[in-house]
Amino acid sequence: MRSLLESIIRKRNPNFSFSSDLSGYDIFLFFLNLSLMLIRGVVFFRMRPSSLFIVGRGVRLINRRYMKLGKRIKLDDFVYIDSLGSKGVTIGDNVSIGAFTRIIVSSSFNTIGVGVSINSGVGIGEFSRIGGSGGVSIGENTIIGQYLSCHPENHNFDDLKLDIKFQGTNRSKITIGNNCWIGAKVTICAGVNVGDGSVIGAGAVVTKSVPKNSVVAGNPATVLRIRGEHE
Image (cartoon, rainbow, N blue to C red; front, side, top):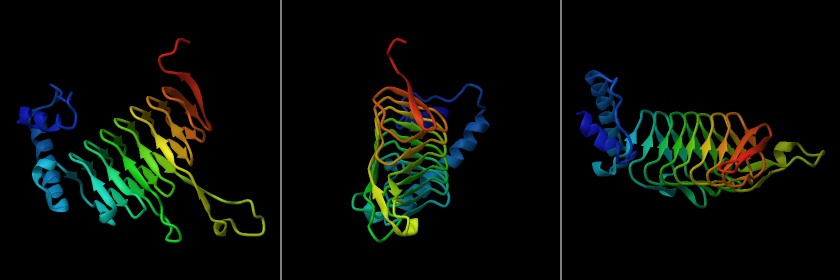
């Protein structure tokens, strides 16, 4: 059973192997839970088992006709995705989306949003919230901690004679590059471009674009150094 499970998981993670500290019973329980999630994936998506959709409890996909899915996708418990938008939601191969994450393209029917693109190999931690009104793109093999928050729009507020909630919004795309590591509780604001290979420290609020291979931290976030360069 150990080798069978490892071969299945290696379709998503080629370097995976079970710890030698795990007992046969531990692996059996893991196998049982994985089997239930795979069965749920077949029923949920009405696709053949070879697609390997792993679906947790309480997953909700709204406006599924605007969604494009790759293979070997994991949607953990209570993931909620509403794909209504001009470009909808695209999820590549080998993507994992953590429990209680919400991806919502359009928050208003006045003007529908653009969309969210999550490329292959991306892992998103639990309780993340990604809005797609102005567009969000996450590059290949980027890993993201819990509680990511992406906001590709801002409220207008310059008119003192009008309540802020009636002044509308301005939208600007967020782009996160390939091979990035985004720490827990990071907030990324409208118009930000995170360069390939960048690392963003936990709790950072990223208000400005950063070049590739940046190491970023703080509120507002600043570039501490560039990976690979001598200090």
